[in-house]
Length: 70
Image (tube, rainbow, N blue to C red):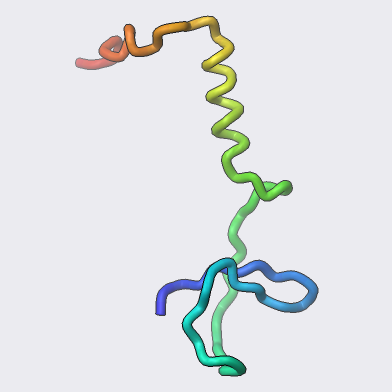
């Protein structure tokens, strides 16, 4: 079986996707905390960077696509 991502809430691990295990079976695992953003939106930082680029006034970024090529 591959890794199972889960959320721990109210004392219970809740899988984030379907798990193919029989009901009421016992499992052993070692929890590993995954760093998450406080609001649960992992792409906010990416969107912030994209918004800065968009608001830069540059209208045709493709015109300079070879600028840093050797």
